[in-house]
Length: 246
Ligand code: 1GP
Picture 1 (cartoon, protein in one colour):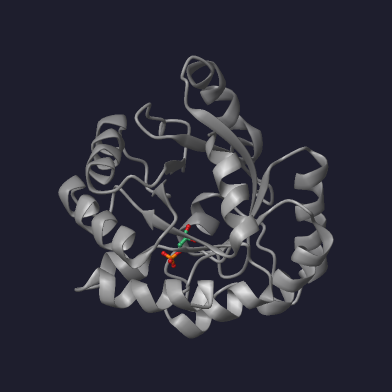
Picture 2 (cartoon, protein in one colour):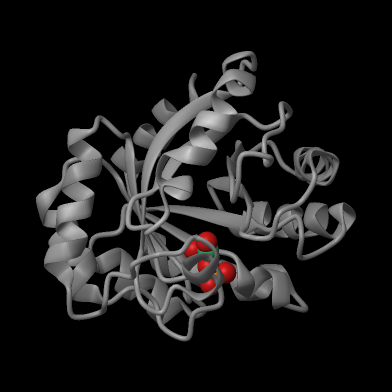
């Protein structure tokens, strides 16, 4: 089954967890170790990517190691048009909707369009919205950040994504953010859209994960918490259990 169908099926059963692995943050072998522990802890999908530009070989090796460690699908989460590789299962064809630069709204996507059209890789169109503080992706992506007290702006972007026909909306506080996306923003966006909602950035504890999923996130993403953990399983298992209300 196609990956987007699998995501929808998972959401029909309950909340979904995705583990983000940044190929720039560690060697491919370490990425494989994280994937193996995250799989054991019950993650549903892997996302591979980040804001630091890396070459195709590095991302391909990272995906290969994850695939050796787990049968869960791997989705590329590209920071630029160069982050394409054919050994993943899918790629978010994403637009940073609130970027001040057309490069991140449509430029990279145009550059990637012909090479991507030649790959069998499933493309999942996604509207990406960066919320304060935004961290590296906010800076690199030249985001006109949605501030914490601007739920209506977030709703406007999310509705625009849905009306464009995108399959997912992603609310991003930025990797390593001190705070996750505020509950009110998540609640109001969720109330106004019918496509699945992903929330990530700054989720490090079971309490935060439960809060974000209770506010309305269909899919909760964690990255840094596993990359920094000495024991990935011990840190991730309670977070995933909190999201899934196990
Ligand atoms: C970043 O939303 C993801 O794109 C994950 O953020 O690294 O803070 O978990 P963290």
